[in-house]
Length: 333
Ligand code: 13P
Ligand code: SF4
Image 1 (cartoon, protein in one colour):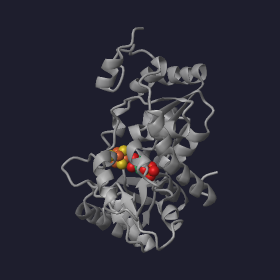
Image 2 (image 1 turned 120 degrees about the vertical axis):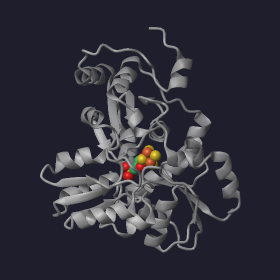
Image 3 (image 1 turned 135 degrees about the vertical axis):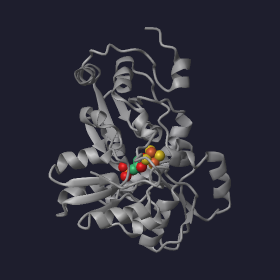
Image 4 (image 1 turned 45 degrees about the vertical axis):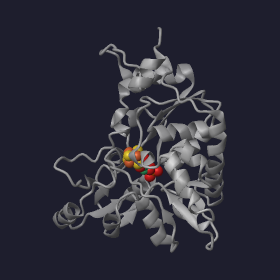
């Protein structure tokens, strides 16, 4: 088939009709074996994609899996910065993303030229950036962190060393509180985690007095202040499995509820209500990926994540520091 690369770049994916009678689950399994491909999926992907994935995880777990896989093809069912991370850590693999336009509002909130100018105002500061940022921002950073290792990363830095934290101001404020640091914060945020309504959560808690509120640290301070537990998606999932409570209000993207419900079928999980008239705390970027697009990208091996090698090597330094500290702290194997 003649593949129009320009059209793919414009649309974000190869837009072709597929036979509606195809069993996509079986086809995807066949393609995995035929092409020695591994599917890495984030918890915010739609349930069908989670069900065909070889590994589902948070950003730290996904980065580790991407770095150590010996598959020829990494199919990244997540967003653009995650596929970039896989390429940075494992450049000899072909990295595919079902929809190249699956971006991230948080990563978009830190354009590299503006961030470079901001950084110049603080020449003595070390730059710690949350993994939800572009490769250009990673290249401008000293250490990367994820929600699963952020505290350990900050604690590994001498107390007298001033720090800039980017791009998530909510995670940064949470870390300042937890570690007692006074990091300078870049003013970015995630559109999904900023949408929760404290007023509606409070009312929901009154109706469900036994339910615990579990929240992702990308949520605003007011929501985190009333949370019973705060953690990365993997940490929230583990907590919901091991904790004795039977009911949870979950303040993060709704995709995670699929694994929570599967792992604890007798517990009740209620998505935290957003501050709008619909119940849409789905990430519109994550949800651009579909099972059809996943199948097409595996079948035709497009779109592929291509990265400039100079940029990759610059971005790799801060990623390597994160992986080293995480290994030493026992957070990854
Ligand atoms: P984690 O899964 O690493 O907690 O990150 C959440 C998120 O917003 C990913 O985009
Ligand atoms: Fe980005 Fe937020 Fe979507 Fe995660 S949930 S990909 S941080 S916009």
